[in-house]
Length: 266
Ligand code: BTN
Image (spheres, rainbow, N blue to C red):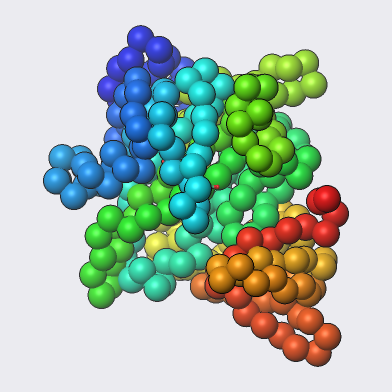
């Protein structure tokens, strides 16, 4: 693990078990996903690696949005991993990453969390973590992916003022949150296990647990599709490729991408 005076590597190392990733901690980066994609492209990094930015200044979110974070209360990192599956066989990976985050946070007793399709982690229905998966390299039978994770660790009122959706954080009722080092270690432990398992056997082994922690399974959902149109229906299943199955009257429809609005969220 590379060192930074702002990062307690011994705390992180103490909590790491079966970690596959070579960890590089950098004080400031524009985007860990951008940096890692560039490092992979120029063959300057081993696979799998993990890049942590203690301060990320221009974080990228899904669908061209920005991801805001701050240098004290956020964890921003990216990992790269070479899957022995084509890009089309890896479309459910973001759901597996969401489950890995869920399980890591659950192990730290961070309560009231759930998954919103495809890969948002919410706490008390507010955004706690986001995942951005990008492709670094692909062949017919393999894909090297860069998986970026942004997590709100401590409370930051200023950040909330600049974000147009309610944010959650990892603090408990006493206002205490786990350290970024411990959080990273638990996340990497889970990602190491789940990536191997996903690579070998795909999504079906994770499906039941994903549905158990999904906030809208068997509930009415409103879905905004990539073309801006909206649709509503009952969430009835999740498929091997990570798409969602929705029933509207007697019609079943499969959606590969889109944004869910929970009926219970105003
Ligand atoms: C989302 O829109 O929900 C996904 C947000 C992903 C943010 C993370 S922070 C670390 C990594 N680097 C980036 O530039 N983005 C991802």
